[in-house]
View 1: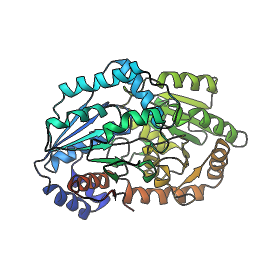
View 2: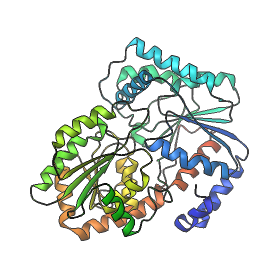
View 3: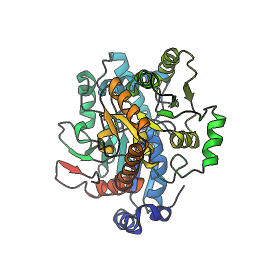
View 4: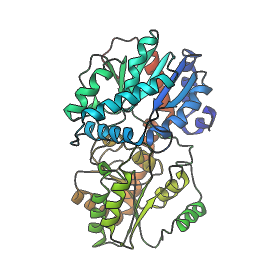
Length: 410
């Protein structure tokens, strides 16, 4: 893992020094992060990068995950979908399983810490244990789009969330009426990780050759889990609209996550929609395929993120960091990353995505300018060092009486 000093050439020495100064005020504090998986998805990636830096800064930082049977993750996936507005039926048996697994994990994990960070809905029942540790502070970190939750699921989970000292959201649109303080913190990417580091042209070419992706035509790419909310079927429809007038290829690259049991079902529907089209390349990559994702994004003419709901969509910042033009849906946290027609193009439909992709493929100078603007926006707002600063500030301000604190850079 990279040390804090290695980020200084990218963000400047003053940013690194600010992190050291803030961390001194928390030195020796025990901080526990808990989520549902170590591999697959942006949350796991962020924690894998952030926890070592917290330790370097002098905190006793620990990262734990909850465990449960496959049936438990089907329940949590239903919660995930329902909280993002999809109709789901949550039976009494499902709710009992959710609570039972949460309580089993509470007995297994060591939650005796100064600060406990619970990520997303899956580990929420752990908060029942906070009465054992009266001096600890608990924060719920919500990474999903909570702007229009299904009421049954929200009403069930709301009492658990109300037991936290603060709730942390990625976008102002996700904040709910709650009795505790709410904090706005955007996620981030690690510019030094294997997924985002600079690559030589020969490295990119070698990866694409290994993945059997020809470079004879412009490549349009979406990198996402195979999830209904990522709308891979809509991406295929938009691509076919573009291909009617421009030669191009489409890459849909995704990977499994241990807490997402729907991936195979969605992938099968995408395969059926692709119908052996030689210009559509479906890649089911292992969760450690960071070099492959990096090379695919750098080889692409346009990056797409056509989500229907999105907590944040870090693939947007990943693409912008590589100075690539991005076409993305104006949902969730994506508009925080893209200013329309300045650092990318925001769309609202398949037809809009088709038009935007065509515009970028036909005007390379415009596409280049959008990518360059996007890279600078990410440098100032969505790198790991800013995220780390916001978490340190959140921990330091837990005693504040403000209802909402904004820590989202610009």
